[in-house]
Image (tube, rainbow, N blue to C red):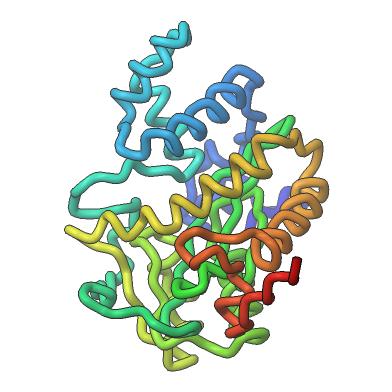
Length: 276
């Protein structure tokens, strides 16, 4: 947008682009080591206590000897894209200009694959820095249909995951998300509407439905992410790919009668026990 080699002065370019002149000269600063450590601990506490807001997280951190203010905790929570789960008007920060779609799952019996898909984003810590993981999940089978990593909380990597899931597995009847700005954007909703998919979004009084995806994130983090120290985005991508393959094909789920997501999604029978 701004061309430093153009004969037009930078101040004039900024004015024409309707952006702050100061932002033209701004150079992003890397997140400090102390903040990275704090963000990792906040992420773990959020999974353990998803009802804890910035005040409670501040107090929990102080119990561990970490002196931090509530405002700083809140700033890091926003950077991580996490939000406390409790009854409130919005379950996620949304763009005020984006339309919100009604919640379609109240009282709905979900009884087959591809009836409802859900999508969410979570923060993934690395040895240095962090990335965001977006996943499309089949609600009935708990199968992860597609996923993407990104270094920023944008819409593009969410769309890529949705398009891959539809290309490989068809399309659901209903697609459910929270009210995050990535999911309410016109670019994201257009992909679903063009495919004839009904959009559903968590809203007031529906906060418990986020717990389904929160459990998935907790499983991935405690069984994979927190056991590793990814030294690069490519390392994170490779290691997560291996774990997600294990999660889909080999990990039994108590909620699925000890079957794997693949067995339920593809209607595969349980293996017969071997004779003694």
